[in-house]
Image 1 (cartoon, helix red, strand yellow):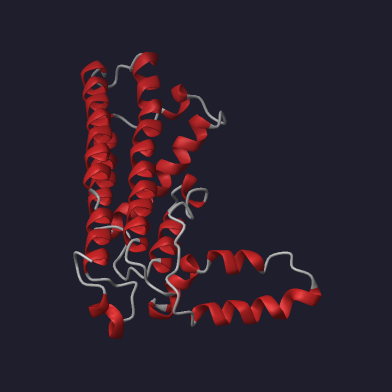
Image 2 (cartoon, one colour):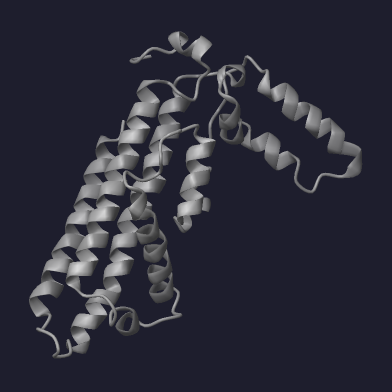
Length: 230
């Protein structure tokens, strides 16, 4: 299911690792100050690593939803929190609806949960939401997908994710220069963060693979209807 996404993620992470290696070789021994070129590279590291993380999360979710869509599952067979994904069009219909239609739309939403007609799942539903992969957003994502595992393999990695998003945004959105961002952490510290994000991507893929193979977005009573290979 995730073969292509895993391969591309590994390739992107390999590029980031090569960048760290270049930075390490260019750094000087303290207390001498590193040249500005090294600091700029360290600032760009955050943009490069974040791109790999966002690719892994966004494309992993998209591929997972595509795989679930091929099972042709009706809403009545899905677990409750996955309704947040399956019934997206119904939830959207509730926004800015006039008073005359408000209660009609609410009833339609409740009826949709009991539908025995296979649901069409929008695999791009999280596209905009995951443009900044903060820890909080990953927590909500796992909740919507009914994934009960932690979002990271080690709780100590959570601060690294939010730091990554913040530093990347500072450079990419122009609030901070790559030179300024790259003046703080040296290559050994960048490597720690690289390893944490790499492990988080691998953990995320494992969660999706297991979630798909166990059909965990489907109510237990109905899982046998959708065996592996179906």
